[in-house]
Length: 524
Image (cartoon, rainbow, N blue to C red; front, side):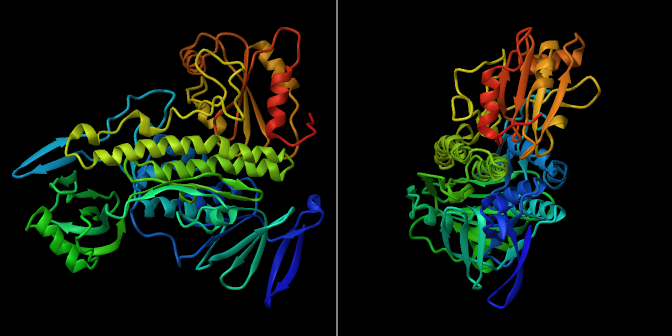
């Protein structure tokens, strides 16, 4: 229910949740930070009917390119959120790289194209500057009825048993069931959690990153001018514009003059007198920052994205890992708000922190390769696409549960064509769980599976096991060799695999799995 209130002379509306002793709140969730991670989380919550207040300290969305690679797994997330087609229209493939050494240019593909496969609708990385990614997510949030409060800082954050409270820079107190910090490396929410941010920042290793027009430079490739002594220069064309992202490494003693005139002169010295830089739209100095929070949650406070882990830009991993943090967290917040065990939110750290630790190691390794003008050190492949990421053996996917010939609990649910011309991913699109029944006994088990009326609903599908080509592709992708019921989480990972026998209803293993992430009691 809603309740009007007056605070500091301002009229507003509080959401009153009678399941929590009538404690009034301004929103279910306050999201601090409106970068791609905060916007992705707010968008996911909005489509789930969860009220979210998004606070952003800057006066508008970020206007720089910074992160510019959207990996295949993140494109699958965008597909579920309804923006994949727009992202692909706004972006483009990574261009070949051109390594300029004196009068010679060596050309090669940094991003190896992935083979087309039915299980992977988006096999290749998408070149999409961060400002375009942010704009897509922001527009999608607005279309869902969400908003962002720009120019609002989160000054202090506190919590009690029922709520978390954010004191804003404009004198308000916002109360919510949960607060999620997507507010970057200097996160206010992380500090309120009391999490250590372990790692290092190399102040001696600096790089100027800028978006600008560069006359005399072909937009059909990513240009690199290697120099000894750590003074490499590169320029990558940005799709949908006539801009380049310029990257200039500078040594500790070098002057970091960020004016357009100084950058234009520096580019001429480094790359060629014929090049003319103008129309500068954004510029920053980057320092390698490699850090990982020791905890992602404290009660009603959580963190995601750069607030939890910061990476080098190599390999296009940071933004993608952060958006997938949000995708993991959104459905869990919905379930806990609906009455699921609070421990479900602990699995967010249990699943996502190991991923961040692994990605940090890989991006650090790739960044070291940027200092070596060898194509082998600059090549990217399957590991960066994040399609093989699995939560198997984690808190929601015990290693002692049933598997198929191809899948384990915690694995990514693959795509596949269906006989009616649709695809399996069409069944997953939306804020729900999905149950797939293969075989007669699995269909009976599916029919008798109890599911709660609160929280994310369950969509039930009986799939063909006949010997048609499409059915064969589906059975191969899912490793189906006998009657099997596959339960898929809202973030499109396998929740549970169940093999019913000829007489029994769903076994205790399936019921136990359902209890871990749904409100109780269950109802037909």
